Amino acid sequence: MKAVVQRVKKTVLRVDGELISEIPFGLTVFLGVTDGDGEEQVDYLMKKIANLRIFEDKNGKMNLSVLDVGGEVLLVSQFTLYGDTSRGNRPSFTLAARPEVAEPLYEYAVKALSAYGITVKKGVFGADMKIEQLNDGPVTILMESK
Image (tube, rainbow, N blue to C red; front, top):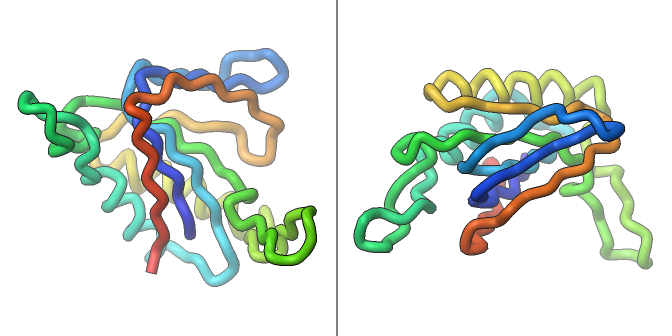
């Protein structure tokens, strides 16, 4: 399982022009699932994300988590994180889990992250989403489960 975590001032997600989700500040998290991933990998990553200290404290040091600052999380499923470009110029997505495996784990991730007391907004699994975000910093962290 892979996650791209971005500190944001604001994120807006639309599908077919319709507003689906919006967060005022916090984290936008793009989540990719591969075969063999399960609840253990989700639990590991969601705990790390909830406690990831990438917000600045009063001294300007990245020392606070999304929990500490009262931010929200927009969690977006993104199979393209498992795009393999090692051969040719067209990515292969064979490492990405099939939707029937990935979607339940994505939904589980929403619940697991919410259990920390974080407001979690969602994308629409499998949809063509349009995402506008104002990155803060920018701060972007790549994470993988064990």
